Image (cartoon, rainbow over all chains, first blue to last red; front, top):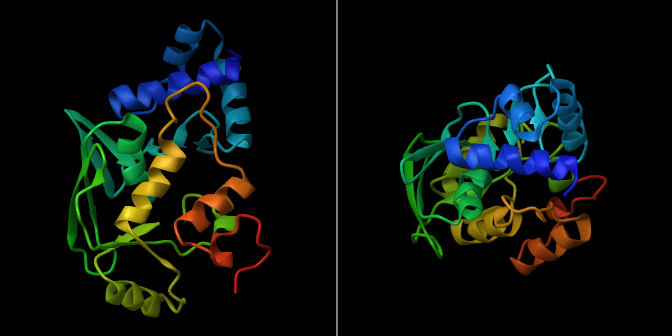
Length: 146
Length: 76
């Protein structure tokens, strides 16, 4: 397995285990490499649209569907708690974990809270909608806005 | 990418911002998108769908128009 794949898996499995982005020293220790190796790996993963980084090049803002920062889209699976980047990713976290979960979010217009149970075969019956303002061709132009 | 309780809420939200409502996606459709994108994300062979694959995925869920085309130059 090449370095970037190992790095990607280590990042994603850390998010899955803890709900948070991994610290670089921990990644470097696990992969037996330097901080600079991690930084360069992050840049390649960003170029391949696997990660979205903060301007410092060291802080993971998004490892979709996981968010490195708190958001309005929360997911609970077992005793673990996660933040998702958006409504799509809120369902993406249980899909990635292959676990039952509960999604907490809100209606963006009315503020009505959303509590959505996700079972192994998908969400409980629900009449809400997902709406995306940005067309697919422009999602990565400004992924935070998207 | 946001949740809305109803189509009326989407319209009101868009009116406030002076933008046209985009295609609505039902929760069951969103689950299909979520599993298609992310079900293998924690595995070594995970990868993002390419443009042609994305078009097929969206079309399979009834999401056909240019809004969902990952390579459309414009969306009008």
